[in-house]
Image (cartoon, rainbow, N blue to C red; front, top):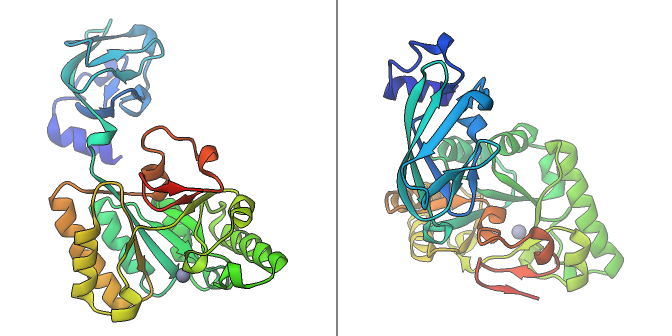
Amino acid sequence: MLLVTAALLICPGLFSSEKARAYTLKNNKVTIYEGETFPMDSLVADADFINLRLITSDRSISTPTKDGALLGLGIGECVVTLSDKKGGRDEIEVKVVSKADVHMVALTLDDGPGSHAMELMDFFASRNVKATFFMIGTDVGNYPKSVQRMVDEGHEIGNHTMNHKQLTAVKKDRALKEIEEGAKAIEDVAGVPPTVFRPPYGDSTAEQRVAAGMLTVLWNIDTLDWKYKDASRVEKEIINGAANGNIILVHEIYKTTVEGVKAAVDKLIAKGVRFVTSTTLLTRYGTEVEDLIGKRCFSDKNIRD
Ligand SMILES: [Zn+2]
């Protein structure tokens, strides 16, 4: 619906001959990543691809695939002409970008859900920020609407164990239960299982990480927000730590953190930084999640056994 509204704003005459056409264009500008396809069904409604023709002005930049998607071959911009046998004809500007060129950062929020989660999500939704929430199993039941919203709005939900115990300081069986129970508690409330794991205090054994069965996401930027509880300090730490590929740790349960996050995110977005989920960041160069299980991911470039 949003896309349709946007297309109407850009090209008010677009739908005038809708009935005669084999397709409906939702947007006349698309961005795709090099080596990836843009699914045409998100661009074209009621598409009958047999009747559609796609011609690209530069086939070294983008080319149509057999199943009617646009493939990003090389970095640059070209025009794709879309036409059907009923006289419909439109031009789409296609921009192909390299994933390596996008400045991405993962903002990770620990120890929730808490009373500030909704406020944060309102803010994230208005800025198209995707974050990762590492939640404590005993707390998810207190904020079921927040947890549901995280899932609905494309944030990543993470297992921060059941009781926030240091896993290397408790008995082996207890540690494994902490991981298992945390994942189950989150899934019970969220309706979907968590996709990332973060051990409390960053401490875990390889066996525990393998047992968690998902990406173990640590961090390389620690804002120490819990210690200073100072919004401007949080803001400064995030801005200084937002180099491409970094994973930033904050705790969603402090008002000062929420204020610092908001201020920093706005300034970084203005500089072109994109806030993505942990999994998006860690798989951006094509690494499979399965190949990272058991490892400790500190940033997209710092992944250790
Ligand atoms: Zn924690």
